[in-house]
Image (cartoon, rainbow, N blue to C red):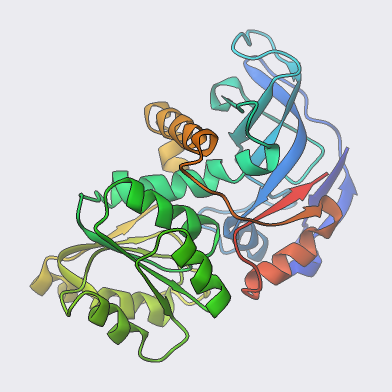
Length: 324
């Protein structure tokens, strides 16, 4: 089968098209014919050797996959050949076929396309659990969402409103992206490339600050975000897109009883009681029209290097999808 692989860490150019053997199934596993692959910043971090956990070489990236059951292993009973499903895998998604455990599969409703469904496992669950499980959002609270026109951000804006946020403040890097955030329900939209963006956030809260912040940039953005928090505020960190880790002095959190919380989705996936219920909830919201997905582009698998390049250059919005 065809796949996209890298044999060394580096920029998008290290991604190469290769021929590899189709995965062989063990008991309890399912082989999927891949129809859609979600592209995420985790894929670029894997490629650069900067992911949260080690990335072995050679490596086929890709964690979000939607497709059709091609073959089932011994003992599989929940799905059958031909079923449409979406799943999260540890790796191997940038390929024509991928295998996974039966327990990770979620059926795709007939009304939902593969391109839509594949936007939900990683970015949908990330937004969902940052707001609820880790961020402990309470009704009426103010939420600050960075990169609000991106895959996680655009879903987080809508979900924050769905879960009862009193005010959602979105940041993005262009007027086009800010307009998208407003259209999705943000109460305030602020350009974080402006030097005084923190003052604009505080002005939007009448100087009180925000209760919960979703932070994935790192560097100066992290430090400025901490300054935006009100007493008992929570900053949930789920990435370092800038490549600039922030240095933090815990004693600086004390005077306002602040919390800085790390989020890593694979830990959620170890608890089926958490991810199955939430993913089904997200799919039902898509089906009912209560949650809108922004697909920023659909590309052929051969274009993976180009997609990584434009995504890291902040030239895209919404979810980027590859198709074999």
